[in-house]
Length: 234
Image (cartoon, rainbow, N blue to C red; front, side, top):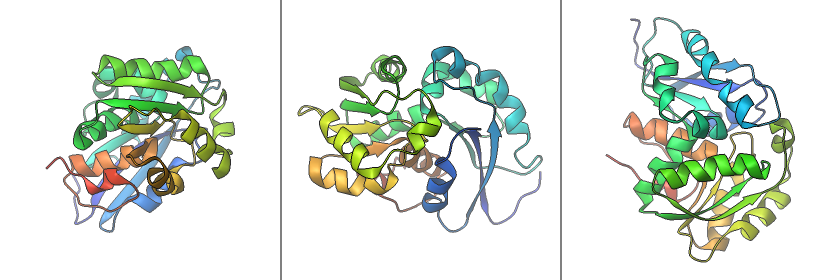
C-alpha cells in the first residue's frame, strides 16, 4: 500500500448532492486530504430508493485511490445510512473505518451526553421517520420530528438560510438536549453557531457530524462550528 504524510480519507457521495463537498472543504483540517467518488441515486428519497444505494457502495469504494491507505471513509447520506444500518461495513468491503451521518450523529450525542433530541429534516415525513426510528432504536429519545416536505435532495440543497433557521427554531422541543438537522444536502453548516446561540443547546447537522466523527475516529484534532467540535472521544 502507498502511504505518505497526509491523512487521507474517502467520501462516497450521492450523485445528486450539491452541498457535501463544499462543507467538507471547510471542515477537513490541514494535513488531511479527502478523495471523493459518487454513486447513482434516484429521487425521491423513498425507503426503496435509499436501500438501492447499498449494492452500489462496494464499487464506489474501490474507486477511491486504489492501493492507497485511507484513515477512514464517509458515506454521504443520512437517511440511506439509517435504512442500511449495520450492513454498511460489509457493503463497503471493510477497507477502512466507515462513518455515516446517522452513526456520526449517534457518536456525537454520546460525546455530548445527549439522550433526548429534536429532529428536523428537509424530507417528506415518511423519510424523516426512517431517521427518527433509527435514533430511537439506538437508544435516543426523539421528542419531536419535523419535516419540510421535500422529496428531491437537489431541492433541499437550494433552501435559503432564513427558511432553514425558521424551521429549525420551530422544530426544537423544550425537553430536547440537542437539535439534529438531517440531510447532507442541507446547507446548514453556516447556521449552527447562530442556532446554538438562539436555542441554548447543541445543534448538530449531518455534514458537521459526519466529518467530526471521521476525524474523531482517526484521532485527528480539528476545529469547526458548534459545541460538537469542542468534544472528543479520545
